[in-house]
Image (cartoon, rainbow, N blue to C red; front, side, top):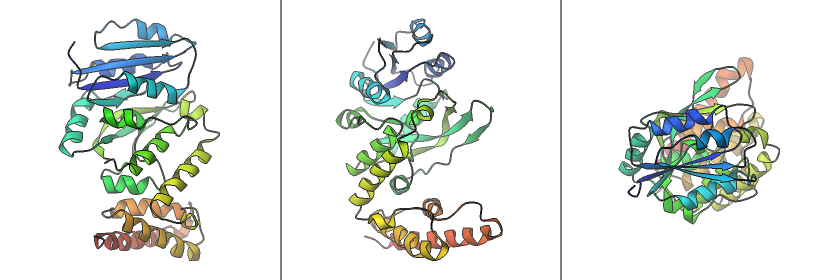
Length: 308
């Protein structure tokens, strides 16, 4: 087999119900020049047996006798990658058949270091499925890092050298993706999201991010503080729910500072960010809070356009 263009990386742990669908979704890609590296992280169910049943020459299999954790699994997979690009897919998610082809084209045509995609969110218990709400430009993604993780990790594809240079950091399980995006942003990497739904992201009770969530908020707060400090934005402006009189000053100042540091943020991204300063379920006040959000977002985006 010649050197692959893309290395698809799939960590797996106790996912016997879902992993076959994940594997099949990669094997059925319209873009064929890839390797699929699957790492079974010490599963105690039938996951390893299902992985071992596949004989496709593009699949490389790694079986660990003891669970090492998701951060270690992701880093191990990156270290084994032979392709120019790596594409992540978790073993309980599903890629559309054109995912690799479309994402590679988007990555190359926009000269990006890495990009995610729009995606479907499938709630396994209820069967409900909804579209994700992603921002797509580099500026918007950098801005959204101030309040959330703007890339869906199992939808990400990027240059292999980026991930080999900057590994996932231990101690961040449950929020390792957010910590990674912060570090890559600080290193000047360029981001994007393909504006097409190219994976189905499955939400279920046994999901790693659902099980290991006790320290997620503290990890997120620590990483966000690091990111805002790098932008020169004071901790006193950190987005949080505030009364009307306080948020006009604090939220407005935060957006102005953010748009000065990251020119080109869209009104839509500013709108989403400012909502973090507002309370939910405003009842009869909802039209007014939305108008407030829109006006401040427009003003912040206009100010950002005059930064050179």
